Length: 182
Image (cartoon, rainbow, N blue to C red; front, side, top):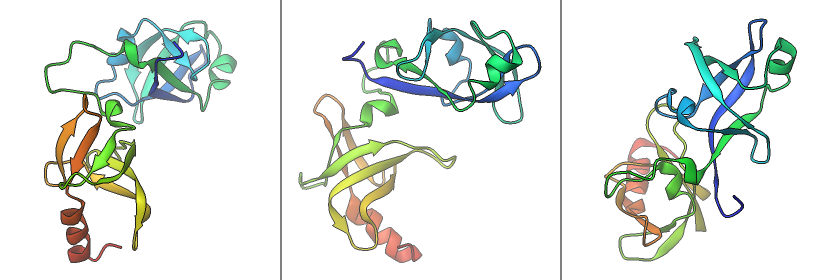
């Protein structure tokens, strides 16, 4: 699995109850996806476990992990993250579809083809996905990192096979100056 990338799919936020259940925060669009993996890994180098969701909580889910039978064992997992190898994700995506994680590491170009930097992450803080771009050259007021909304206004092409995305950073910067953002 060394050539495979690890994908973070959930975090354990603590124990739930007295019989070894854990509180889990899924990073998947549908929490039930976690149950479909034949194995999840406790950390990138951790042991494999299976997961069964029990019920939704106000923040996250109550879940059972294989091998975790006591509250103490569940508490010991607090703060750990669950990972799967990239190869475990569904390879049967429709044409021109991709996972956000496939964008990480891609080259970012402007509309003229000039390289601006690379995608470092694709976070979503609740208002939609963003491209966290590590820029080769800093931008005044922003430095070497920008969080660009991942929408058609600013991301005009995604070419996974070619290894790049094309963005309209000029339009985004103009919007920032209109709204008074840094």
